[in-house]
Image 1 (cartoon, rainbow, N blue to C red):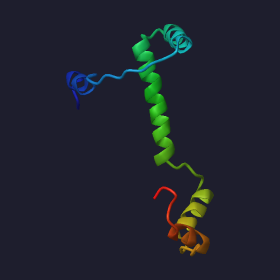
Image 2: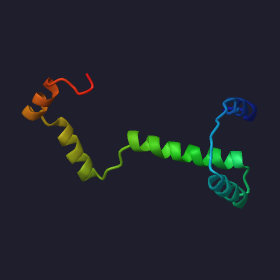
Image 3: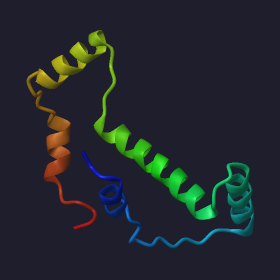
Image 4: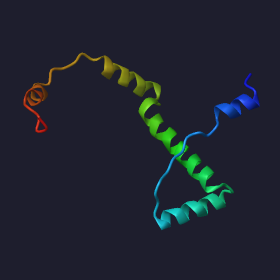
Length: 97
């Protein structure tokens, strides 16, 4: 079991983030922080962490009912079909080259 002191050391805030905000954004953030009885730092960090977790979850977590999951797996397992137009497109030099 992790001791509270060890957990506190592991969660120590050693990194620093800086950002720029308009006066209206700053006002809204300060008002929201006060309304939730948090410091501006705690409010911004909590909100950014929640949004970061959502953004990452969208890219690594699939939630499908069993029928849709089966359809998804079948689609992944299907043999690859040759796409002649795609092959032709990819054989031409890129506009970036």
